[in-house]
Image 1 (tube, rainbow, N blue to C red):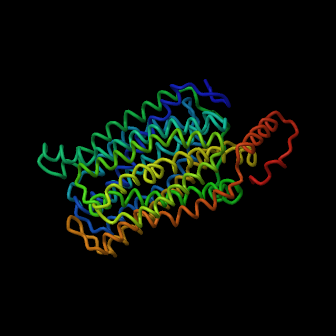
Image 2 (cartoon, one colour):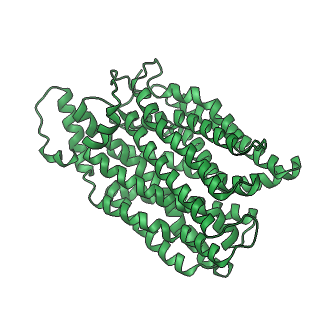
Image 3 (cartoon, rainbow, N blue to C red):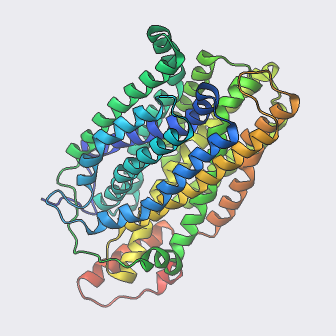
Amino acid sequence: MEKSSNGKLPFRIKLGYGSAEGAGSSSWNLIYIFLLYFLTDAVGINPALAGSILMIATLWDAFTDPFIGIISDNLKSQRGRRRPFLLISALPFGITLWLLFTDFHLGFAYHVAMVVLFFTFFTMMNVPYQALGAEMTQDYNERMSLVTFRSWWMQVFTLASASLPMVFVQVFGEALGSISAGWSAMAAVFGAISILLILLTWRTTRGYELFPENTGFKLRDIYDVIRQNRTFRYTLGIWTFSIIALNFVVSTALYFFTYVMGFGESMSGMAFGVLIAASLIYLPIIDYVAKKKSKRIAFIIFAAFWGVLSVVLGLTITGPEDSTIFWIGLVTSGAVSACMVYQLGWAMIPDVTEVDELMSGQRREGLYFGVMAFIQKIASALAFQVIGIIMAWVGYQPAVTQTPETLLGIRMLMYEAPVLFLIIAIVIAYFLPMTRDKHQALCEILKLKKEKKEYDITPIKDLF
């Protein structure tokens, strides 16, 4: 039975829907915070080559995103278009996450293969999962609420996946006799939890599927959704540049904690824990501003806050002697960056799909979320490759005392580099045509169109 509507969703449904995000976020953080470090310092792969592993895998993943989205748009099943993918992908998702951090001494090719396999199952879960949220309600504020619940799961499991892995590696490594075994056991724990979280979302969202007519597909559709939908192009730009900015912070953080601040495994875990715990405070604040003002205004405010503080922190933090400033920055600039990009980005994307529905007469959430995921992966791949190249260029060598030039490079990657991309994202957000009033008018026009009544698109013509 289809329960999706324009109205309110029950608390338990919002809570259950968000659980799969715990799997997605924890695995994402394991890879983008720890995998590069694991490959360089545990496996012993050259930093530039390790960056290439992530780039190759991420590019592969990026090209599968739109196609998984399209397949889910056109799937005909008694369980809806999206939920079957959650059921199918849950087990291999967890297993490949474990294998990804297990070193069988098979070298470069093995790690490329494992990360490609993992991201294949990640996409099979994540793209339909995101599209499912857009189908569950069309209300502007309720979508923001649903994304906020999802963001709570994201932050809780980001906290766990950022603060606990190095502790697990140390504890399991001592118990099992090697650091390599410690990494493997750590990933096995997170893989098992991920399986359960995905299945919880699959069960909870039963009955909230949509069963629209088959949308059909032409390869050109991937290009057309970008070319023909003006609102989507702006949203895509905001998403792209803010994701690049965030990836510079996330991928550099462990190097910064270890070599600039002089933290060991426990203190690095604590730093990640404080970062994510502080970000939980900002979730309701961002939610409030987005509902009170708009998602666009909220993005501009919090991105500017992050950018200004990053400039200040980059100029003032040079080493362990600046620890007080570091911790203040961590719970302000760092915490905002850890949640605002995804919380507001996820909330903006569903509104774009109604613009497409008015133009095409089809509900193609899967295609749109697939394209967004594609862009996210391309942006991430480029960021990782650039970081790997810069780390090699500034003379980074694992597990040794770094030169002043290397430390400066790490500091700039952590603080100054993201600001360049944030400025671009803020400018694009300023010109974003979608507002709360226009979305409400859009939904009213869609209702009139479905009822075969006359309607006027003049109030929303700049959305196209």
